[in-house]
Length: 434
Ligand code: URA
Ligand code: CA
Image (cartoon, rainbow, N blue to C red):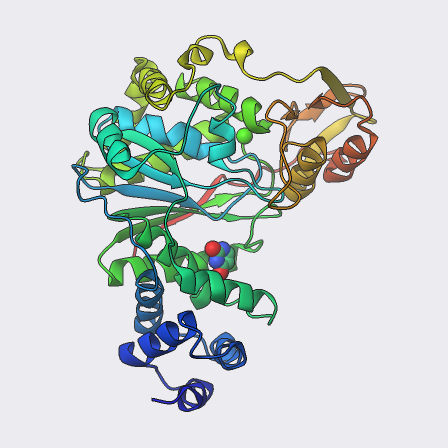
């Protein structure tokens, strides 16, 4: 087989076979095929797309390019959740103990935050002593005993995706639905998921800003999952403003604790119940989505979800006392209110600008090597549709520095106000499972 022939085939709009796709991905991973040939192929895919079976073969070829996590020692159907990323997205912190509380095994591999999106590992590390560096046997044992454990990224997972994603980044080929879909799905499958729930975000703070694009991506990922034997459901959810009220590591842990008690912000509460119901259903712990939701609501109301969170934190060395006394979490020295300059209704909160404001405070990393401050962040006191009087606090800044003018400027930039009542956007746009 010659790479040049395969580029030509794809350029002419024909379908590549499983064998051809394997040849390309293995050759590229081993440095037998150069970047310039993969660039040409990626551009051909960008213009001609990929069929369902091509995308599935690409996904599996990338899965097989590196290590695969073996979760077979863990009992039950392992359902993983993936979010395409957003600002103040506290869902994983809530969902892990919540679905574990009703018996779904959560064997979660998670990452650190970069740019304006946060990482679950950073958030969990605001609990003193919490350790994510646990070995395989320990990880399996914890999930079997407690139904939940979270580990940092280990192993050499999907090296082909790492290399291809970096190449796409500099060849204007990131923006291709089949390439994004295979990239995301390959990582989930390599980390051992039997079934997958995807939270595909849309809106100003999302990777896919337009609803149509988010739907196409969701469909492509669901089709890949179903084609390769991993039942997949995608929920399309709103990220036109940050999720919940808290953005920042320890602030989000506190928000997660409130939500596990059933007292969280309404959008975060609802999204966790929707995503959680699909996880419980795919794990075959409920007969229907409706039953699954009732089980989760009960676990919130009877304290089981909160108990599971405590057990989980303590099992990984964390100080579980913070669950009853969240004031023991890292706390910033200063709190400043950003006050409304006019009366009206909030019509817009540009999520990624709010994410940047939180990053400027030190809550997120500007580069991979930046250090973060777990105590700092933002709490949104007003969200879209809320009525505001002149001088009301829009946002509380939790800071360890006294000069936060740049943060205040970003917050004013992200908020828009109108005089008329605002029509609210839906939180959930669609659920796709075929
Ligand atoms: N996120 C990914 O993991 N891969 C892509 O290709 C795009 C976004
Ligand atoms: Ca939040």
